[in-house]
Image (tube, rainbow, N blue to C red; front, side):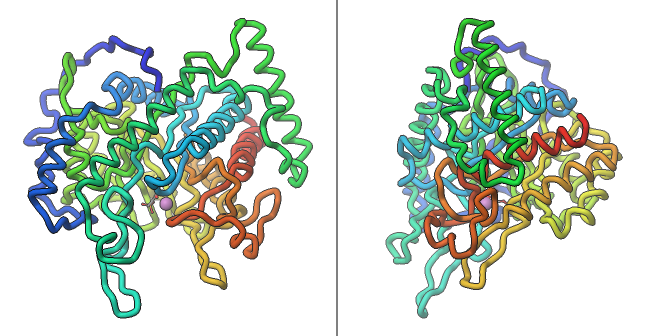
Length: 465
Ligand code: PEP
Ligand code: CO
């Protein structure tokens, strides 16, 4: 997020057949899965009306500049890093959590830039990641059935009736908390956030525990040296270079909320979702004739599409036809999340489908969501080894099939939680009890996230690129 970049963007001409018969509300004529049911329709409409009047959270030129960066990544000239919580909560909108999350993402991106020798697109799953898809509309405990928790955008996780009834005021609160988060991130990024560039300030004690300790020391030392060299050269510290762009993303699940943020802007054609730079669509809501696909086809934001083992060639072709009929660059990011066990079977036919389709695509790997399991004690976790293995396989499978893996999508936090096992410190199932904070999916902690970035660098080096 860099308000000074590209203030005057060239307007490209509108393709004549762009989003025909579409409006921000046309999704309402299609089946909308995963939506909250509000008991008070008038209260919902009042909240949406207010929401539609509030100032936007991002600008069209930021969105278009992200599209340019994604187009570069599609050409292999940038690496894409997307990370953040599975779900944000209102309680966690506070200074240390935001600062630490930003810090780990910046540190990871510096390790990637240095190791891969290319710029990075940085995307945070934050400032709006408040809605979650659920496998069931209701939850029953001890004979009591209440609506499922759908994220802080909709209701409260407490299991009582008052908490679980969808509350439209939460839509306004989510907008306000997103704005606060974004405001703080913008200030940090613009103000220098200086401690990201000296690796001696990074908490790297975990490195000693890694079998790759020597490689990691070499990476951090040479990273530190290069950054200091650049500072000497430019007379400025790297943390304050204005080129540090940061973008936001969330799953655009709650369509009334997304519609209220969908706006037109002066001197640009078409519509933008100004609630986030990069909305993504989950597989559970990606039906070709569903409301989400209808909504997404009309906005000019770049779009993420989650691609799991249930996706087939026809479905993927259909999505590309509907969401990018003009084969525009910088428009589509496919986020595959197959799981270590399925990726070798499931990914190659989809790579071929994309090649046959011929439209520009950025492929990125989400090695988290296909590798979720429960421990013997019933705790949801993910094994670092499996996450890493899926990532390595993703690099290999793309290369072997004449394609390219252009980035990663991780669930992570800047805190030292214990939610995923393994990593350099080799967290065990027993350690999960110590500091398990996620109410949804388990996240990589600070150390595991940095380790992941360094392992990506190491893999990239090993592959000889
Ligand atoms: C997520 O990214 O948090 C998520 C729900 O992913 P998926 O739709 O891939 O399961
Ligand atoms: Co998740």
